[in-house]
Length: 245
Image 1 (cartoon, helix red, strand yellow):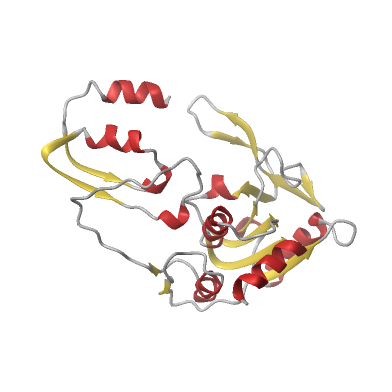
Image 2 (cartoon, helix red, strand yellow):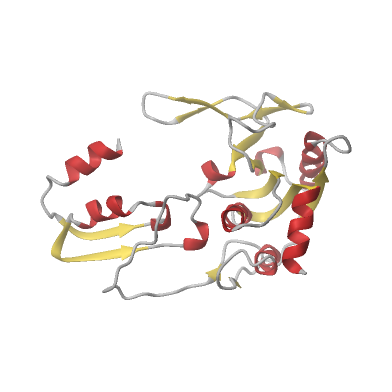
């Protein structure tokens, strides 16, 4: 699909007066170049880019030497407590400025450890915590750290709840096909650009908070509009503790 578009774009005249490119950190240089060539000589280009949210290792920074750059670190969507956690863990290159009028609560934390407490038990406890805070199941989304094929949670059930999940297929219009269920489960990467009142971020597991892990956690936390529950392995909990030490 990408190759077809690039071949098509190279044959098109410069016909755009205005071009706005969002999420440029997720694009490859060739894609941006093909789009920019559609601009007329006097056309205007606006690009929105957040390198802290780049989740793909094959994306290089794209330089625009003649651009007028406006930097903004303000966050209006996330509760202030979540932004404070983002800054405490140093998930971004520059501190984020919390601008939401909603203070919120500290994210809940559930730990799991094979042979001691299972991932599903900890995830169930996190969902129940959200319910106790008044969130309906339709207001809660479970986000898995692992992809859909490797996740332990992209099955049919979690406890007594039927899971609503992407089944890997698309309809004739190219829209993802979802199963019917009480509680939505999705991956962090597929949920990027979306939001939910309450999130359970689960299967969080790493030895070290490397740059790619920081970006993934930053993206996940900023999907929450009101509350977050983190379900993390003991070694990930220790890695986060070292981050704030």
